[in-house]
Length: 73
Image (cartoon, rainbow, N blue to C red; front, side, top):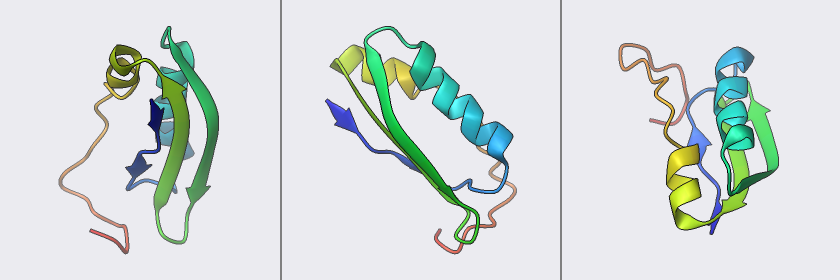
């Protein structure tokens, strides 16, 4: 599968790197690209993998539901 999740985080690069590192270290998933846009406070990660690997690669919890700084809800 090709996965292209968008995250409402583009300013805190530590959080972005946590997501990217989760994809990198997941067996069966391969990171293709990622991009962060601080102006819109979003990041896009592109990776491929088998279905189970894709689910595992996205299994990181960072969301702070008390804050929303993105221009896009």
